[in-house]
Length: 185
Image (cartoon, rainbow, N blue to C red; front, side, top):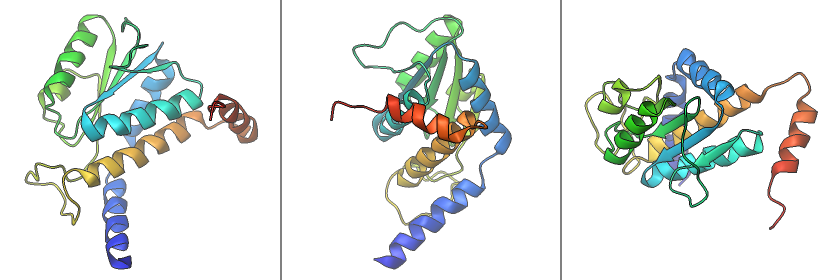
């Protein structure tokens, strides 16, 4: 079992080492400038998106997850962060196009910078990981489906939030985040 754990950790480390820092900084800039942030992904990408949204909320960002009953309409100056390993998820393409039509910015987190969704986005963060499609150029993995992508997305987006929230007074920032953590548990 330890060798499997090490292999998974090594795989994810290799993916993280391949992240383009400028793309990550670009997403951080969009997060800081957005009036409100909307997050969407299907399936396991959607679960990673919900974790991202929760951490953004802890950081004090006005954030919503598309598909939740309390999510308002997207508007100009808002940001849609879409997560799609393939970059070709039909619903995400529709939401991205509608968001652009309404004047919102769209940022895609994907493995495929040549996808239809990528072609209409204001920014792209490429996660150089394996997906369930095992396209040419994707790294090898012992993991099933898109596990490597999901794990890498989670860690990269967490790192981007950390970088976005860094201040001179980290203790104060931590206290503010703690206050926003749920207290109904």
